[in-house]
Image (cartoon, rainbow, N blue to C red; front, side, top):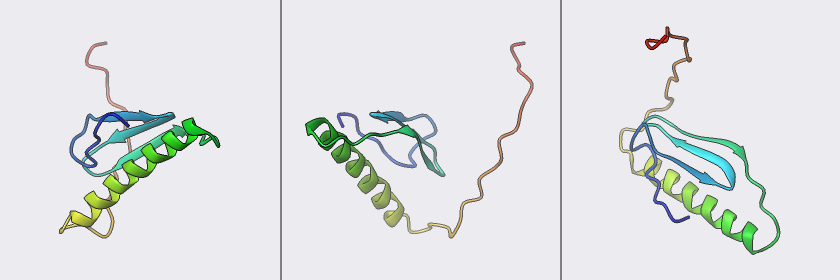
Length: 84
């Protein structure tokens, strides 16, 4: 993993590990897609990248002294396209 991902730091950061996309938000980190960990050096590299990411996520959560019990996620809603 060449890029540094700072969990919960902003609303714009996105990274990829294999075919998995990791989106950063201030209230959540979303992992979508597939990650195939093959039994070879390429699979090892992907597994190490995922482990590094998860360590950063866990550390960010552990370091948050005001961590709530549950974050209420707002449901997505459709809005009128301002460019239409």
